[in-house]
Image 1 (cartoon, one colour):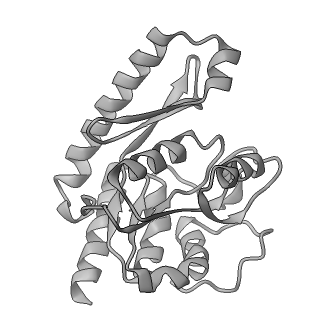
Image 2 (cartoon, rainbow, N blue to C red; image 1 turned 90 degrees about the vertical axis):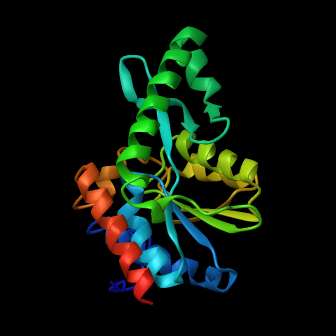
Length: 231
């Protein structure tokens, strides 16, 4: 799907696919570098599909899980990314503010690693094309549907640095302004369509922000792989 018009930073996205089409316009200059597009499931997958299509790039999954705070699982105290060994990034400011101890962090880390294993079986064994190719020396574009605290994206980028990518780009439709500033200060290459000062909920930037299930994600991956084989 082509974007209906250039995104001006003020619109509400119709859905994740439209947001991905707008992002693809901003990322077109990377096509010559033969990047790999790495989606953060589940929500990043429908955003990543039009990007991969526009760049004629392989689409793979980067399995990352947020570490939720006690009694508030939507608040990230960190994140863990699949790998050998798994990479963990902690948000020490939030951890200290909430008084979260190391035992709680470890329990949450183990719980989310178990979910990563489940997703590997659900997605990567069913659609092997979604397994990331060797990333050393590659340009990698990490895609999600939105970023609040940035813990998940930071873990993803840490994993890519360990894998030896030559260049990592974080591409998201919407990101909190303070988080965007922190990423850029740390040297992260960021492409975003909207950077609100008061983000609130990522879903507020979409008319359709339904929760994807495993079957929908797998169907998107399978369709994207089939389209690429036909090219």
